[in-house]
Length: 584
Image (tube, rainbow, N blue to C red; front, side, top):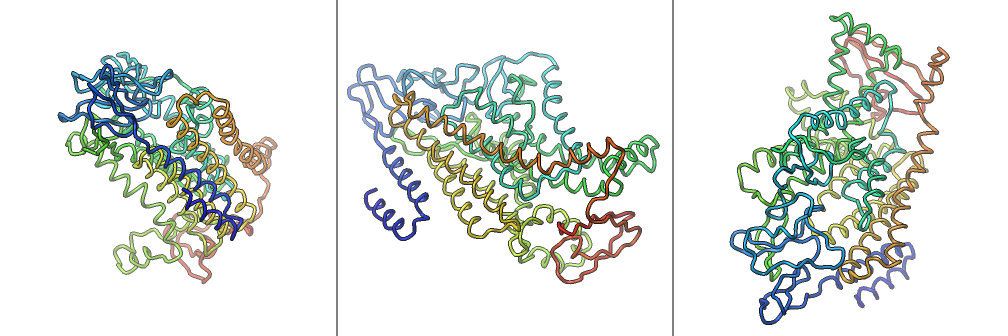
């Protein structure tokens, strides 16, 4: 630390702009160095091979003293120590350790499990008559009744709000992929999932900000309701896998709207409803609204796909009392093995499919724009060229990239890549996870401030400030976590209370930014004002209707090709909104 500190001082002396990075690295280095101590080993009835700070032994009684939120038990005839998933293991508020008899007679130490409904290997199962709650994240166990009300609550709390939310996007042509919303949506998605850095959060405070920011993860009123189950036969893995269906449901909604609009020629009631929809949205702008809805699905569901995939694929290491790794198990289901066929079929295979489709494709396509390697490969094959919807893909990609300079459109893909890398940190131990998150956010903020990719310079500043806000919240979380591990008796001191207050204020600070943004450029207010007067003012630009086989210059549609490339389109009706200020 001394040599590192000297190098930091030299670095800061050469370039004063490095002071923030230097302070962060010094704090993190000292925290890691202090947290690697050795717990006291017992004498007499205690084994002599106890090292590390997760478990120690009482030299008088021989009982195990297991640090809070950890589990000890016998797996495969080996005594192992495991760091528990959130809400799985008991937290002793009066002591940093939980006492467990040394002669563990079963495969699980029930005294270490969360007192409300947990049992089994690494507390991965619910008690008899209990079941995992479908509206909790992470999963908690609740008492479950044998009725159908749970399924009714599930549909009303999860799917109905998502359906009306995307209908709202289509009717009002709301766009979530504009420049001012990029960093805020990234912030909202991460602060309510992997970047949940509040130290020992009070449930009411945590629920308040997670409910608001959870909207951008397609979580609406479910977090406001008490935890409820939908069936005793489901386990934690089933509930986690159900979240895939919640994430892909907006796509089904969009497909349903398209089918509805297609069937208006054959069904009279569909035609009347579609005509009403055309008059409300604006004649010829339904296709534009559907494109924005599809882009919103990609953006808002991406974090949910990453989160669930991480839950299913993350291993939890098993240590012996000498803190040597002796194996691993699925993170949220310690009773299973990764090699079990019963785990591979319903969990590993769907997670891999989602990984190579919904998770991998969006950043690859967005990052590929400067070189267009994918299109070059596709166009070498006539069969692939015939099936590749170049114009459709270009229009969707432009909704993400239109706010960036032409030579820096790949930044839209970097935002998705940052989300993916931050979720990969789940594979690391807790303190290392926070450190990796700190490095990723800091590096991305510095890179963005140097490259300045947005056409509007104010957006570069706003995004940098939001990322800096995330970095400060994270570094305060690291300080609180390490302080609790080293000196648990200080957990109620005024210093940690001040840290909690600062974190909570910083978490809510971006709400001011997004409120000003939505009030200033609200399309909803524009529509409501003029529709109530029976007026449809002409917006800047013109809507061009092209019937039959049409020739469209991709330099206008895409806003990217400088050459006058002409595409032949087979379509019944195509509406293109041409705006002088917005090339996309």
